[in-house]
Amino acid sequence: MKIEGHVAAGFESVRSVFEQNFRKRGEIGAAVAAYWRGKKVVDLWGGYRTPKRDAPWEQDTLVCVHSTTKGIAAMTLALAHSRGHFDYDAPVAEYWPEFAQNGKSDITIRQLLGHEAGLVLIDEPLSIDQLGDLDGLATLIARQTPAWPPGTRHGYHAMTIGFYMQELMRRVDPGKRSIGQFFREEFAGPLDLDFYIGLPEGIPDERLAKLKTLSRWRAILALPTTPPTMIIRMLQPNSLMRRSLVLQDLDTNDRRCLDIELPAGNGIGTARAIARTYSVFAEGGSELGIQPATMAAITAPPHVENPIDIVFGEPDYFSLGFLRPGPDLAFGSSERAFGAPGAGGSFAFADPDAQLAFAYVMNKMNFFLADDPREKALRDAVYECVAGKRDEISTHASNDQ
Image 1 (spheres, rainbow, N blue to C red):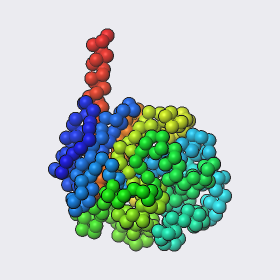
Image 2 (image 1 turned 135 degrees about the vertical axis):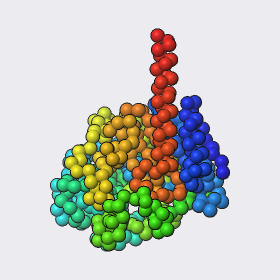
Image 3 (image 1 turned 90 degrees about the horizontal axis):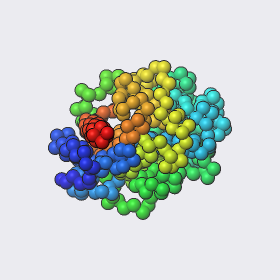
Image 4 (image 1 turned 45 degrees about the vertical axis):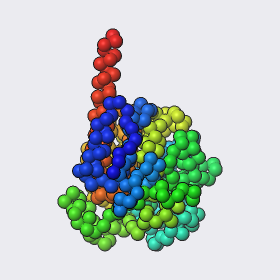
């Protein structure tokens, strides 16, 4: 097992923590990247890209990051917003009239992206073929009825949020592009990113990491660290949590599930690419033409009257498609940070106040909702290094005076 890549001077301890994840925390294969003040300061990868440990994790290994994809999708919508294609406070139905069915005419885009719309359920099972038929899927999701009065509560739209983000993009973009196509042309091309929502045919299987997925036995072992409210909801067949897992049989080790576009959960790429995308936003967004008004909307504190998620039963905070920090979930250096975690442990975010972007990806899935010990240790190490560099810069400035 080798650790490869590089860290900038002053960030050496991140490599040490990354190595410890393999020695002490059961890591199989992973990568971590960070950009500070627009410069790449951490780019590490190592271990094995398969649970059998029969193939090394390479510099260009791609891994599915599940819900960390939501942050990428939210950034694509942010660019469309900056170009004046829609207003966050406008009703979704203003751009997508069919959406107004069954009591949804007044739901705003802000409420939809804040997981307040109550659209966590789908009234029929979905096949891979249906998921790949964006026109048919749009017709199906437009007829859904909210599970609670929109705007009165919030609850995690685990997969459905991606369906609605997808169709919103197709409605507001002048080119009627999907989120995957928009990202490919407006982000991945200009920034030279290895990240995809909808995997291109030309990428060989040998570049794809295989996940060590969650199992019942591993779930039992994780019970001591699982919130009791979540355990209760998972055991109740009619709970919103159980019923909202509309794609619970989705196997992201099956390439067919990566070929289609699922903006809430099947993005695949490198930590380097994800961190680079967030770094544009950590630096204010001007590199891609993100307008100050859009950045102000993204970084504004979320308006959450009751932090308890009606689906999970635990506190969380969402705004404009991103997870936000709060008293029960701290990341970043201030409440202006924004990002998205993924099932199993991946996590990426931007911290505009620290001018920092961070991404961690892996192939051994764990059961932590947030603060997976592997990711948290790396994140803390990066911030410690940033603090050290700031002290160094401050000392040099004082000596120069």
